[in-house]
Image 1 (cartoon, rainbow, N blue to C red):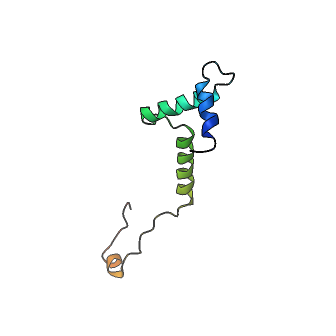
Image 2 (cartoon, helix red, strand yellow):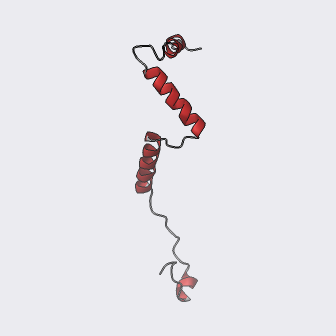
Image 3 (cartoon, rainbow, N blue to C red):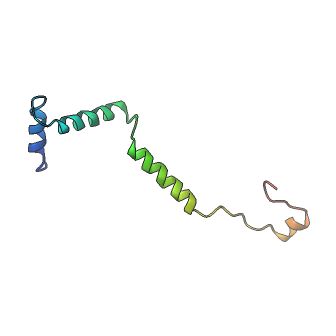
Length: 81
């Protein structure tokens, strides 16, 4: 057990009569996310999408090797040309 467990369990045991209910609120929200299969990850999804967009900008475009001389002589065209 962590050193924080005693205070955390104490705040949960004081719910709903405790002055502050932040621990109970965050615990119930985390539990609901766990049992719902992470329906909405919010900030996690946002930062994952942001990181993917930055990685896509930083990655060099894929290149194809130049055609062999015999391909050029035979009228080879690159894909999409």
